[in-house]
Length: 462
Image 1 (cartoon, rainbow, N blue to C red):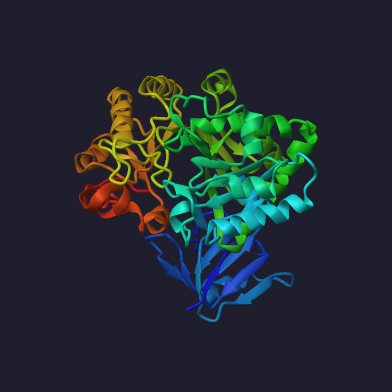
Image 2 (image 1 turned 60 degrees about the vertical axis):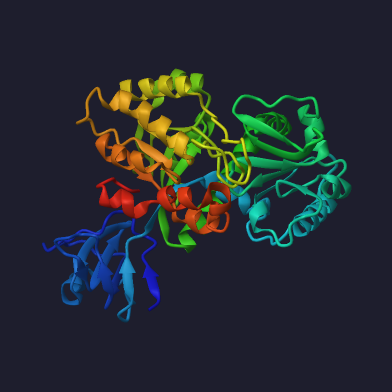
């Protein structure tokens, strides 16, 4: 059965049996309407005015909302439901993927090199070539030569000797860069790994072009310096275009609300402008992810709960405790099965997380912490528990983002401390081919993607 999604719904479907003199802008009739209202789980018709629900009920009752200018749609029995809510995404990143090189569906490294080569032909001298979406575990064939499944730079350097190339991993937790980008960022064989990051080097000590976690920061500085050649107005216009494209892509898929997992203060302020100008097409719920000092210094401007007719909410802080499994960044209790001695990256120190948690608790802010590996999940729960113990009745709704790989002993602790497990199905389906390789069979079976175990334990799963 084809699904008809009501894209214009911006409030929950609610029952309304009283007479209403308003004339609707749009009426849906003859539908199978799922209301998300336990007192009225299904209906036949919906009336909408100014983007809000006027009425949900029967075909007969909805007639009083139909006027000469009302658009009437016969659903012919099709399924009607409220818009989807994206529970964890990156709205700016989605928009940029529609502007830059989209590598999500590439089948091998050679395709990426070809895409970069074509982009260089159209680029100005020195212009950065940017893309996102590659994943080395999904390439066929495996590039040769390689190190840990990653290709060496030579083919990329050949097609782009003078244009820096920045290709972000599908997880967002590592970059592949060419020699020019490394040169501009001051990265070479003698550059040490930063705390919480890795400049991937082969056994001879040669950087192959992969930068994980905080090692990405050097390239971020170089790329930001390049972008700052533009005026603030030009940067804002480009950013706003990415938001517009992302929103349109969401609406095509029936997504009417979006939880963004990390925007800087600058981006939040730009989003407030769009909201107050009435330019947002979907509802946005933003987590602030910025320099810790910036978060502390600017707290007086937040939370935001009523911008743009409630189209923008900002009252959460985002922190990353570790990286991603695919790029060997997830922080594990025991080493990776396919990388002996390596346990991943602790991106945010425990002391730093504790400081941020104390701040968020004191300021009644929601705290959302990225944790994929079992060690990361354990340490996040420990820090959360220190604060939540002050008042377990407080409804702070603190979240562990992803909670992908947990030691079984942690499952009841989520329930004990009222911690939300914010999980995304795409990670399970995307990572499934290589999870046993990274973790081994026992860890994969006991602690990977434990939706059912969480639900049976009474944990709130987002």
